[in-house]
Length: 288
Image 1 (tube, rainbow, N blue to C red):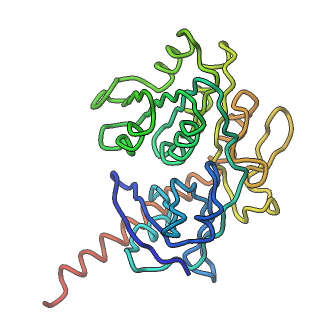
Image 2 (image 1 turned 60 degrees about the vertical axis):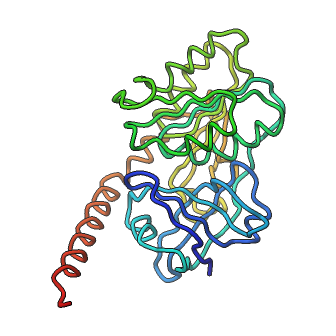
């Protein structure tokens, strides 16, 4: 079992957890992920990117949004509690080298898996520009951490409540048109954001890497649930990725597959909220 060392609520239903997992912390590289399971009987297996790691402490950091039953239950756990199974590190690490000028685009919760990549790119000697996007100011995460690493940071919000009122593709296009143009772009976030980020860089021939978060069960390529089409070929995100050439990914096909469980996710989300409301009401009404 893996003990929770720290839990912080970053925004709304977004949480950061530091978990004791010394073997994973020692081996993990930027871009890799874990699969966790809260119980061993019928528990859902949830893939989550490793946002940070401390080999000395023997800990990894995950950042997640409570959107389904398992992530809601995970969000209810506190320091001292344990997680039954944590498997990792999984997936291929990010290819990091001194490209020159790298633009890293993170949308929403995608800023979390971008953090170790930004750190790795900077340590490799790159000039690193970070573009962060969120719907509102309250949903902006890890800004201070990114400013401590990157040469430039641009924050965009959909409603203009913080930073620029723009989609992340707007400043991304500006950097592509500038001199010198980026030597590499990395985009992580909602599929629709990554699709349009790749479409933005394509006319400028800027190599673009995206990190995909698809439906996943076992994490070893056996179930086939995470399959995507890249360059006309079938790939498995868990073993061939999670990072691929953004200009070659069939995002429309991927989004169609992801949408197949959307009604179930929404139903689970509403049910969890109802359960929490009932529990809080019962606690308030209980005799002192």
